View 1 (cartoon, protein in one colour):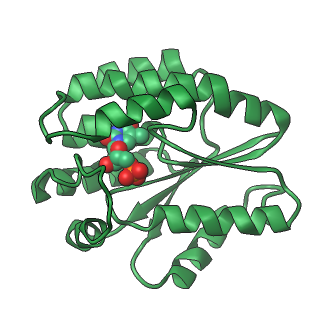
View 2 (cartoon, helix red, strand yellow):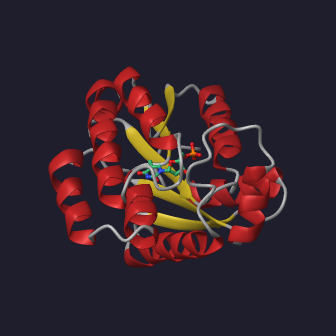
Amino acid sequence: MSGGLFISFEGGEGVGKSTQVRRLAARLQAAGREVVVTREPGGSPGAEAIRNLVLNGSADRWSPVTETLLMYASRRDHIERTLRPALERGAVVLCDRYADSTRAYQGAAGGADPDLISALETFILEDVRPVRTLVFDLDPEAGLARALGRPDAEARFESKGLDFHRRLRAGFLAIARDEPARCRVIDAAGDPDQVEARILDALADLPGVLG
Ligand code: TMP
């Protein structure tokens, strides 16, 4: 999309994405770029309303297919109201989760049909796709321990079992393996400074981002 740059951050629970989104945003703003920090599900008023529906309640409140449709309803609103306008203005967009989360959570871990998810990607995303995706990778036991230690009411997915989170990790790693030009796996273990250094390395080849 003209001038803008779309970077997504993906991974399981408690991998430290949000901290790194904030750090990268500060670094890019200091370098004079317009930065839009956003998240999914959410990132526009309508999409945030759907977020409340989908992230609260019991673990089995929605089936994986219904979740897929809710995620894509919120994603379409986010694209129309926030992402496409920002990219057309030439902003750098840092998005905490995007379409790969549906492939991994609802597809690989939840069992929704991957053909349904690909069809939705084609019709709903159109050309609003990240140029680089950072896949944060961490042992699910460590990630869940971190996530469950947070004062966070939105715990529907955190309350699914360890097996779900193992399938989730495998799902994200499979996406990165299948799309090596777009994706970089970031080892999310260690302190935030170490993780940040790995991220800067994973973005170094993108023209006009950090140099
Ligand atoms: P967060 O905790 O990183 O804000 O993410 C919100 C939750 O939503 C997280 O448990 C993952 C889940 N999610 C999906 O299941 N499918 C999706 O497509 C997205 C974007 C998020």
